[in-house]
Length: 433
Image (cartoon, rainbow, N blue to C red; front, top):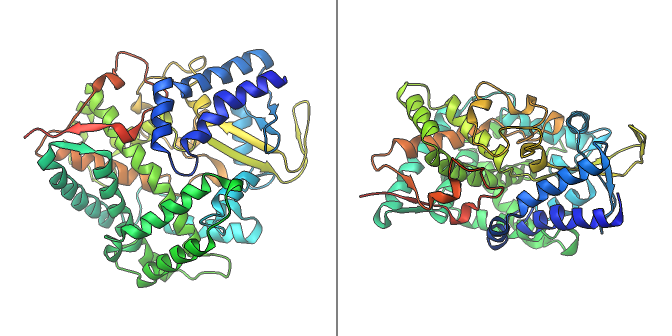
C-alpha cells in the first residue's frame, strides 16, 4: 500500500474509531462521528482499497507498528479460527489497554494462564448454551429492574440513556455479584475510571492503586457468593492458581457496558420498524419463555451487526505464518475492521437495512461474513448471555402499560439506508401519560 493510502486508512478508519473510544466510549466523539458520517466513510475507504489492491491482506504502517488489514471472508475466519496460535488475541495494543484494569484476563494472557481463565469464563457464563442454567433467576432480576426503570422515567414522560444505563448496571451487578451489589455504583464508577485510562493504552501510566482497590472491592462481592448470582456459581467451582477470577469478572463488567448500548439501540430500531415491532409483540403474546425469546434475541444480534461494539478486532502472530504471496513474520499485527464486513453494500443487499430475521435460529459466530461476537476460540464467552439479558429487557419495556415510542424518528427512517453510527447517548423515548 502506498504511503498516501496508508495515511488515508489511518485518517478515515483508525482515527475515528480510536477517537470514539475503544475501551469506553467518549459521548462527544460518538456524536461527532455520527454527525459527520465518519463510520460510513470508513467503510467506503475499505471498499476503495479493496478495489485498488484486491482482497489479499494489506500492510498498513501506523505509529505503533505495521498491521496487516484483512479484506477476504476466508482470511477473516482463518485468523479467528486459528486462535490463540498462530493468531493470538493478546496483541501488543490490547495488552497495553486492558492491563490498566484486568492484567490477568484471558484475552491478554497466553499458555496455561489463558487456558485457565478462558475455561472459567466459558463455564460460569455457559458460553456454549443459548439459555444460561440460571436464566429464570436472571430474567426475574431484569423484569424487576425494568419495572423500576419505568417508575423512575414516568414523572418526566421520557426515557433517557442515563436512566437506562443506571438500571442496566443494577441488573448487571445483581446478576454477576448478587443483590448486595445492587447499589454499589462506586464499583461501576471505579472500573469506568480505569477504562478511561485504558483508552490511552501506552500513553498513560497504570493507576495501580485504583486498580487494586477495585479488585479488592470486587473480590469482596464475589466472596459473598450470593444465591442466584454468578458469584454463587464461582464459589462452587474450584479455581486453579492462574484463574484470577476478579480479572475475568472485570472483563464481564466491561462487556456488559456495550451490551447496554446495544439494548438501547435495539429498542430504537425496533420502535422505528413497525413490521419488526409487530413480530416482537406477537412473540410476547405467544407465551414463549422469557428466557428464550428467539426473535427479540435476533433484534439484539442484528443491532450489534449494524453497530458493532468491537469495531476493531486485533490479533498478533505468534510465529511466522505463510500467507498467500508471502510470510507474515512473528509479532505481526492483524487488524479486522468489523464494520467493513457488516456494512459492505458491495457484497450484501442487507448491509444498511434492519434485517433481524437473518439471525433467527442461527448462531452468529457460525456466519463467515459477520462477527458481532468475534468467532473461533476467541469468541465472546457472553455471546448468548448478553442477548438473553437484552431481549428480556426489551420484552419487559414493550409489555409495560405505558406504550413507549421513539423520539426524533428521522434518524432511523426505515425507508432510508440506516446510518453508519447511532449515538445511544442522545436517543430518547416518550412515555405518554
